[in-house]
Length: 106
Image (cartoon, rainbow, N blue to C red; front, side):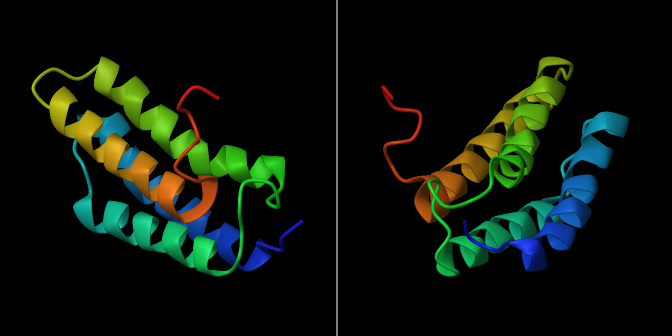
């Protein structure tokens, strides 16, 4: 297992910054989303890969993606932008940690 304890607090803080505006008024905090994607890259750069990270930590990473999609389901005009942002975050996860094969026929 990869020790990711140094990243967990930042992940929690950025998760809150991304999801609270989405839940409140369906707005995206672009700065928080950028910082979240940068954090994902840092986690990947630390050597973490899908097979070595704790399941609970992987769940926290993916929670943001699924929560964004849930919020898009309840948005009107903003739904497309929210889904595109979620797709960008998903791609960051695939590239940095989970590999290009994740979610594609696996």
